[in-house]
Image (spheres, helix red, strand yellow):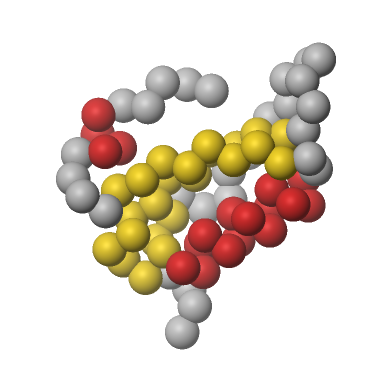
Length: 70
């Protein structure tokens, strides 16, 4: 995964989630859950690393702003 830039953590409430899951379905469910709770960068592209189990994704979120959940 690429380096986390300062701009992603410039103030309180901004977070970066590095997600590692056994399968794509689980990773997508986690990203959807985060999106319901907070404003996020959305569903990220899933990556596989040869020789490493699971899939990975990175999501940026602003915990000060609510997501899609009413």
